[in-house]
Length: 316
Image 1: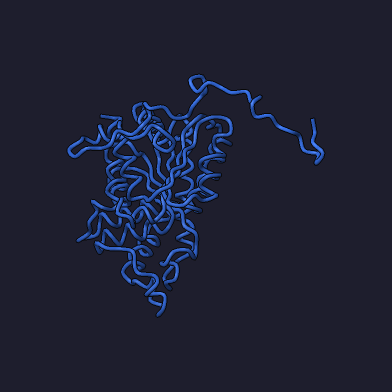
Image 2: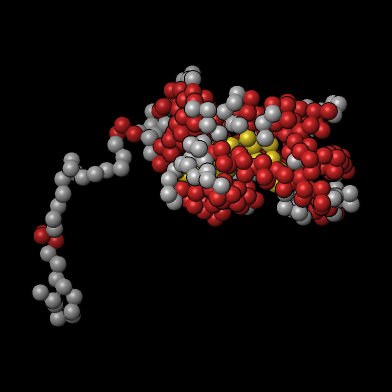
């Protein structure tokens, strides 16, 4: 019965209570972590992680990618430059050499860091310091190598292959740590998708927009073929690209589906910040009818080796 102030009078003794034993719960004791001990194998560590939230998703992605590899489906990576800058080139190359990753796509910054590591053994300048005096992005050696290789053959073979082959031909070059060079050596597509004006080499006078554009368009069409393959029960992993690769992937997927490649597949985004485009273009939109998308937030240098180790464990 309403009180004089107009609010109902509640009798808490009349609450309908439930039994804890019958109530559905999201966490059980079986899901709890097994604290790691010194000397444990990775397998023990991996199996001892708490079976909740991101761990459950990561294990699920690992199983999906392992299944795609066992079935000889296409597993492809799209990546940004920070993956190189956080020291992960050898990890990507290892996945390429073992046949797990069958294609790599990148934005323009990736090829700059990849080339610098191969020809100089170092990369990633201090932007805060060099921007003050205008020396940011003015490395002559970086621009000369990339732009010369681009002008020479990018329109015929694409930017990624042109740079990879140029690195393989160059003396005193550490091709073992170059994704571009290893792509050329292994015959694995490594495509580069540029946004004119966004990379430091575009500031240099010898930059040829026609050559860059022709090479990048060649690579985009090759990437469309890669994504068409991915749609047949494969997997696509977006690693640290917030804009260029999610947008490029979306267009390539539309081309593939327009030409009849409309199967189910898996996607995942790894980044240290959750961005709109990777979540929408990579994780959500491709799977409105089928498939599954995952999203992981954390530092590349921690998350990607963990994923790769989990994948190795699954395939062992």
